[in-house]
Image (cartoon, rainbow, N blue to C red; front, side, top):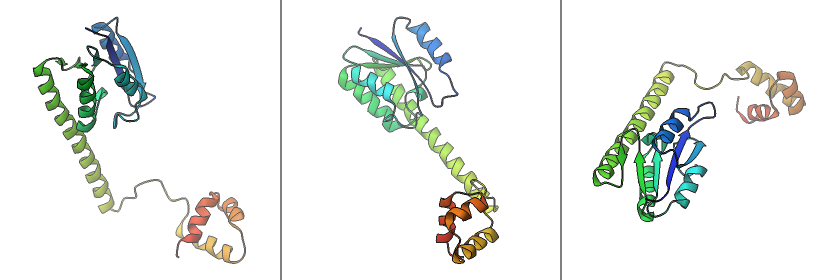
Length: 187
């Protein structure tokens, strides 16, 4: 067997990889461990993962703690597996006990990938449904408006009377960009 590369990933800076590192190190104490703090939404912007995929060669193995630490959609998962297969390398997922060096492991991984993508799509649908329901109830989404309609009308009037956007932004405590946006709007 060649080299073993262990890969740990979290999405945000306030998360940590401690549990992943512990499991990966227990399984492969001599392995090359790499960590990354990047969103798993897409694999293309994950520098550390891409370096591993560039370096990995025939007989090597990439090991992750859980499938979602590697890929969150079927396309990325398929691309990663194709890269590993093309290079003669394998993938192992500790949590699900999947090893693509076996036929059973390959089939099971593909099924898990489909379910992971399905779960992501369901979460997006629920989010969109929640936003639509809030809008239907008349709830304001996003940040609160920095100016009232009355203030916007005052700004337009004062601008017509000769007051410049810089002075208006100081008077109303907003950026000049906000003033320019108000002046572009129709009353």
